[in-house]
Image 1 (cartoon, helix red, strand yellow):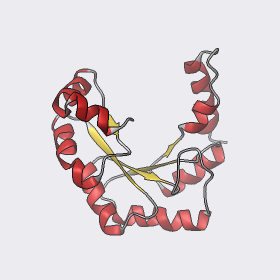
Image 2: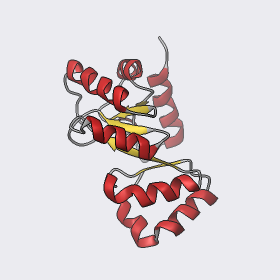
Image 3: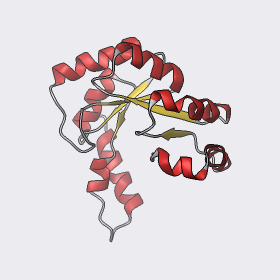
Length: 162
């Protein structure tokens, strides 16, 4: 996950070649607009790298369809209008939104932003193909500890089935 400007500075072809050599499977670029991202996405797919594009609650049905067709493998449904780490909104509205994504997407989708607990993960997994937990993990890692071990502990607590 990163931003598009450093990629443009490095050069799309060079960046994607480096990704392929380093066995990167997918790339999430939150600031890559659909219309400007077609060339990048097509080049990435030619190298076996999945461009994972974002949709949001205010994304139209037609645009969800277009984005899922361009991504092809997976899209990232942002659960809220706002920034990562914010609280989730109404579950009723989220269900309507996620049902819209499912109905208009030609590929699987994962949901992220505001997911902080095992209950959140289980709830989102009922309505999507997976849940993304990022800020919660980063907020619980201290600089003086083994961050890989701590991240694994958090992930295990979020993924437990009971």
